[in-house]
Image 1 (cartoon, rainbow, N blue to C red):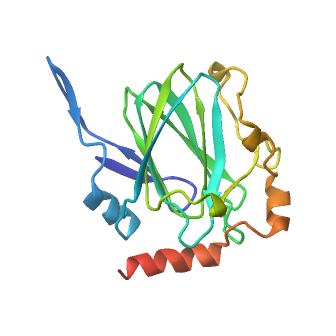
Image 2: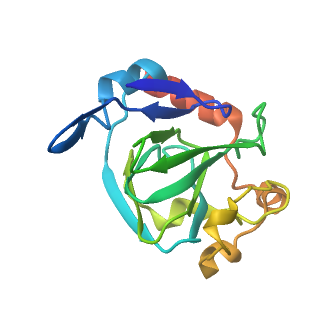
Image 3: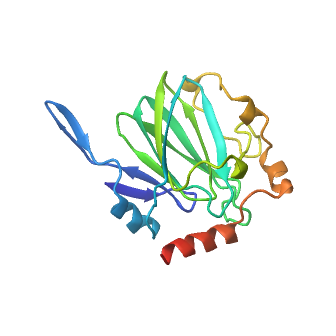
Amino acid sequence: MQIRELSIPDSYEITPKQHPDDRGLFTEWYRFDRLEEAVGHPLELRQGNLSVSKRGSVRGIHFADIPPSQAKYVTVPHGAVVDYVVDIRIGSPTFGLWDSVLLDDVDRRAVYVAEGLGHCFVALTEGATVSYLVSDTYNPGREHGINPLDADIALVFPPEAGDPILSPKDTDAPGLIEARGSGFLPTWDAARAFYASLDEK
């Protein structure tokens, strides 16, 4: 298993080693100990989610209040998506920037998204299936979104995704600047303090 930090601090690409044979293949797609070595603290799992999406479907940009927010470990057992990590932490050296990873059922990569970061993906195939483990249960009162078509963030969707399909919740979400002005974006200092508290456990 190879773990590489993305250009957005506190997010990682995980590439598992696959073991094919004449029956198919085997891979370890999640290892708590290897992830802890990279991140600095264990990922305490509280919930597992799965979504199935039409080609072109965009889900995100989503995040939750910190603390405790929601760290995510995302993989794709079927199909393909482009997964985006967006830095929405006010004061971060990469605030407003993003990085992306192709997640599919060929390389079987995963992405780790720390608490306080924005997360989004676009489905490249019909029936793209995304599985994600999260560090806390869903709490609608603490969940927020940023419009994934916001020009200030300027996510780039591959042409093979086709026209983006968004939910009303995501199209009605504010842009980054409006969200910042509303005061509900996490801060870099609060995120770092929360990560430090997890390191001490």
